[in-house]
Image (cartoon, rainbow, N blue to C red; front, side, top):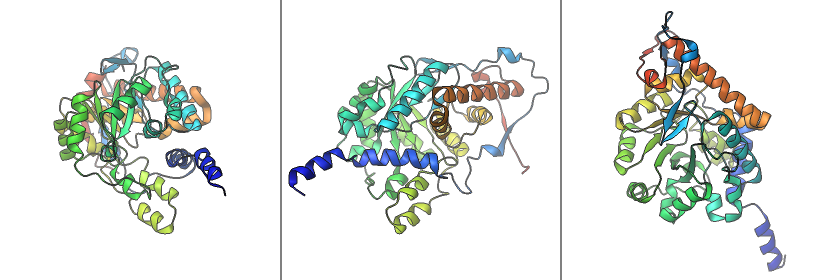
Amino acid sequence: MPKNETAVLAHSEPNIHERRKADHIRINLEENVTFNKLTTGLENYFFMHQALPEIDLAAVDTTTTLFGKPLRTPLLISSMTGGTPEAGLINRTLAEAAQAVGIAMGLGSQRAAIEDATLADTYHVRQVAPDILLFANVGAVQFNYGYGLDQCRRAVDMVQADALILHFNALQEAVQPEGDGNFANLLGKVEQICRDLPVPVIAKEVGWGFAEETARQLVNAGVAAIDVAGAGGTSWSQVEMYRAPTARHARVAGAFIDWGIPTAVSIQYCRRAAPHLPIIASGGIRNGIDVAKCIALGANLVGFAGEFLRAADKNGVAGVVELAETLTDELRIAMFCAGAENITALGNTALHISYFK
């Protein structure tokens, strides 16, 4: 093939980031990528049922605020995607629904658009969601591959975000054949971004949870919030297993199907490490009762990813709105039956350990 034809073909083919994004959407929608035996741990807790709650169900208030923005309910559409036309449609669908129901949203990693400006439109959601609490997103490991304050500013400005997520995905990078595995000496670079970026920085795991000491290091580095993203929901090592180019790669990725810190445990680790910072709970949250449990364990906001993705894929904006409203109904009734009239009261409500299986 002539050199100029090769160049044209290479330019027209999706780059590695686009292919990976497309693979992730397809695999999450089509394959079983949940943990095998490891769970969130939330099933080990229960609220003491209040047969006489002494409150009016109609008066139960699910509203809250984060980073100065009001939310009708403490729900987050967790970071998922961007970088392909399909991902752009998904992001706009999710954002339009978030605007309609007054919840927060995180965007997927913006590396694809930072490195190819033509993909920025796949992350643009402000035109359909001017008021939502919106998080930009960059992988922390990229600070060892040429990224710095400029790229973080570009990610925030690209989408007019209220805060920046730095995601920490060491295991995912380790099992990706094309992964970036140099996580050495990152903490000081994270500290610099927290110091110099004009918006809050959120440290986010991607499905294996933060240990208490790691959370404490991040707090000392200056992060403004922590998203625990614990184990028990989507296993990204399983996602990468389905992308594996060889049987050997698939075996290595598949070996980590039950690796990680359960969500319920990581919430408590992070709350101890960061007693005064917002904590976001995510990772295997199933319903509004789980949302209530997360808040009682110490979370301020609770994220869902896969369920919102499937709702968007199946029924568009209406499906996402319906899911968010259903989760809020479940949360409100759980609060009512636990005797908690508002989110502050729920955060002060005791959970009990279940010894019955």
